[in-house]
Image (cartoon, rainbow, N blue to C red; front, side, top):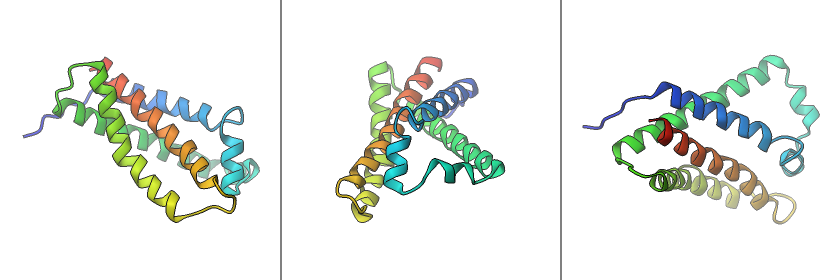
Length: 144
């Protein structure tokens, strides 16, 4: 039988930190301009979604981050991870299988107009999720 005790504060802190990282990652100071160019979307289009649609989108992102934290909690508890290095390794492997490989398949099968853009988009998107998985692993490990 698997053990699974939820640490609500750790899950919430991990989700909040990951959400903040995403706000910076996809800001105009970092990857938003490249992301917009590659996807063909503009920041103006994003603003035109309307406030309710943006709130729903951000709420779904936050819910996704909570789910990631819950899954990482489950794996850390059931793998009996004793060190911070192993927590980071577990976060990496969960990211690799759950995000990296899956996103790579869609990157290969959905080429962009400009050569190399698929891989740039892959790097932007999966880079963010790699940071999320690693940070979440660290937070869950440290607070559990």
